[in-house]
Image 1 (cartoon, rainbow, N blue to C red):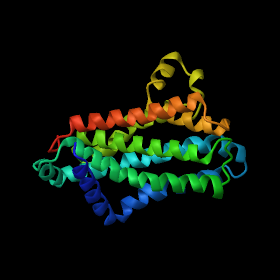
Image 2 (spheres, rainbow, N blue to C red):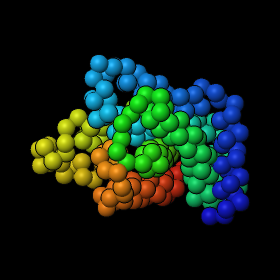
Image 3 (cartoon, one colour):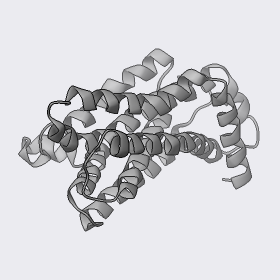
Length: 245
């Protein structure tokens, strides 16, 4: 990998996204709109919003970044852009890292807006630091970016890319502990949830919700989410192909 080529790739992706306001709106605004809607769904029960708002602050960015990243990357392949780029002296790692940097920059904006909205406009009550909440939200968005880059290698059309959401995201959503504590699940389901990264994303948010200081469990959860994102990016580079399947 070459830093200059990675940065050049990231700059190119950002220039392209600048001319795609719908994708930018989806990435940046949709998590905020979902949190706003959630707040008023539980308007008569603010304690419920406090209980699940922090978890969904991590889940919403992960889902939106997964969806947009997978479709945007696939569009590069189907348009022939990816094939032309890989014909140049550009390593697969440079390409994947460039995409991750570009979408990661948008993830920073997305996470900051969603966290600020939840804490200061919607009154989300958390015991821990707002910065820790922002950190986990950002790691979750980066994980969604990595997963989107990875699954785009296995889709032949944008429709197929969207179909990966039920296969990749929905099982994690059901087993992450959002609806019921993971230790209350059937042993088999609990074992599966223990290897899914979204489980640790939700656990990390819950640690910030309940504890005023950084705990060992929070550090573990944050490290696991970050490690999963890096692992999936490496797998994405290894499986990257010039053409669609």
